[in-house]
Amino acid sequence: MIHCEGLVKIFKTKDIEVVALQGLNLTVEDGEMMAIIGNSGSGKSTLLNILGGLDHPSAGTVTVGEWNLLKVNDRELVEYKRNTVGFIWQNNARNLLPYLTALENVEMPMMLNGKVDRAYAKQLLEWVGLKDRMHNRLQQLSGGEQQRVAIAIGLSNRPKLLLADEPTGSVDTRTSDQIMDIFRRINREIGLTIVIVTHDLTLASKVDRVVAIRDGLTSTEFVKRNPGLDSTEDGFNRQGGLQEVHEAFVVVDRVGRLQVPKEYLEALGIGGRASMEFDGGKIVITPPKPIKEEES
Image (cartoon, rainbow, N blue to C red):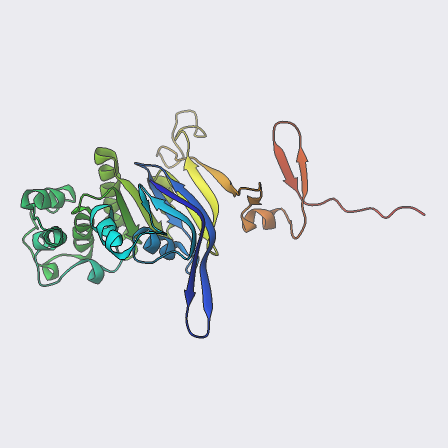
């Protein structure tokens, strides 16, 4: 569904250039539900804006389905945003029109495409648990309910890809769990590809894969393995819940270089140099051995 290779985004002003993405590599499979994590300024929201057709990449490769986002013209970009991608912002003011009801908000993107499907709009609000609130205006809905309306709006054009920028960032833990359950149900029932940008590491147990971005580069991936693989004998952890086990991957570029997370190297006391050994089955990276002075 998504393939980025050597993706670069440079923001230019009169006096300064800011490199937000500096050669990022990322692949997302069709039907996958994954999260992109990173600190503020890491480039994760810039990536999401490029995938959503809101920003234009500066260089590299970025394709979504059949669309090459580096080469699309303005007319094609409008078609892409209307028919291929749905977008959910953290700030509800960017998703919703306050003077409309929940149902009218969901129908608005359909109007831009020239055909309102009221039955489908109602179905979407039922999917997100707002069957009895669809005729309420926004001031009559809680923050969590408004965010669920935003999810329904993001699905109103039947997208192939749903992008969500910090969708749980402004709600409490209980509402966050409800929103993630909605994403998972939609992902499983209709096979929709979902990419969530967040700084919340707890989401790792609720998606198929987590990709960490640092300084505009993909740094680490975490992929779910067998949930009971490393659990206790009965398959449950000490808190009584089934354990979620994740396996970490580092990125290997086209010339074979590894992007090992800095915190891993610091934990081993590795600075500018490292020692590497290959035993036929695995590669072992250790701090460099001290060089002994030759005896005279």
